[in-house]
Length: 512
Ligand code: MSP
Image 1 (cartoon, rainbow, N blue to C red):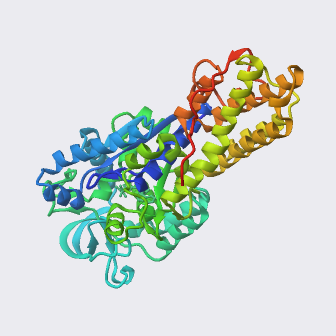
Image 2: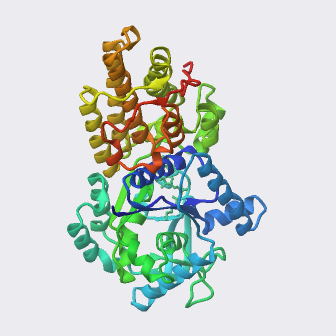
Image 3: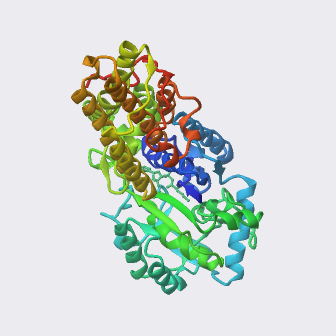
């Protein structure tokens, strides 16, 4: 048993949640659920990033005060996550008083340690990224991330002396070769550091919507400077040292690739400047792409207006979950390898749903229940200790465990689906529907039920509600989440003598 502290990026409240945001958060939720199943004490944190120019501008566009606008949009994120069965332990909002206290305590430490000084900022800024760019980084004069114009900014404000951390950061990377994964992203971060670090402007005199700078009332902190600190606020930095020390620095930050520089360069340096250890683990994933571009609301709206053949009718998570169900969408997002960019399309959801859920898992559950109904009076027999499925189940448990541990949900699910495929193939080979009553029939059906029990455990982090339903249908008491893996996933746990119900198809087949 260990501790597992997992974070998602906190979402900007300038816009409604979309499926790109859901990608990170569903993956994080499944990882958190896996660690709970493995017996770890888990703290899974998500929330909203509410300050800054971008949010202030979108509030103004909606004719609202930033705080009222943030209340409204933060609630939409919380609602979207509840709709996707995200079991977070804490939902942090950066407009909360607890966060103001932590940011002010953290930044005062950095100030007192001599790493913040005043200067004139002159340069280019993208409000949509809330990030600075150099001339060389622009693509055809525009923001490399959004393709939109950047603005020239000139303001006297406070600077964090990031330039003083080149050597400490290189040393930290050297001593913690696994801290940033995958290795390609670690190299990208090292590239930024070796490319030269400059002081960063960390306050704004022109903005009111932010955390006030404690030593200079005329300024608020730059949004990224307050946002990153959320990871500390939630575990009691500055208010509950005992709790904080239990969870830090062995955190796992899951982030999208566009915010690598903030998390893998700035954040470790800020931690060093405040005299604390940098975060121990940062896992960087790629983007969901739609037609080769980053999936974003604006892009889909643009595509919808210009191309009738676009089939992803909207990007709001609930549009897809209303159509397919919550678990199939979670499953789909989890089968996208967490690392590189991946294409996302409506057709691929349908194809995967039919192949994996309707034809494979759903089919296994329904044919086993049918034969138990017709041949055993609906009472499940116990498994055969010598079933050829037993070693395959053990392999699936080991492979899935290893994959979850290395932030590879897609591999964990692939291992589980190999077991489901083997169980279907075994039924086809043994044809229990043709067998006479007796030991062989009972052994085959009991082993199929035992496989379904183990599968329910293994899929529960990905599809919690479906796993519970499967568990119930094969007559087991309680819920799979309350069991522990690997102990309870050992072959032989299905006791037999339990009522098995067929019910409606778990995953009715979809027309393409
Ligand atoms: N507020 C910052 C994060 C601050 S963390 C201290 C932010 N917010 S965001 O809402 O714009 O994006 C949050 C995350 O959503 C991204 O880091 C990324 O993980 C995810 N995604 C948004 N669009 C995405 C895709 N198209 N594909 C995959 N993930 C994407 O950045």
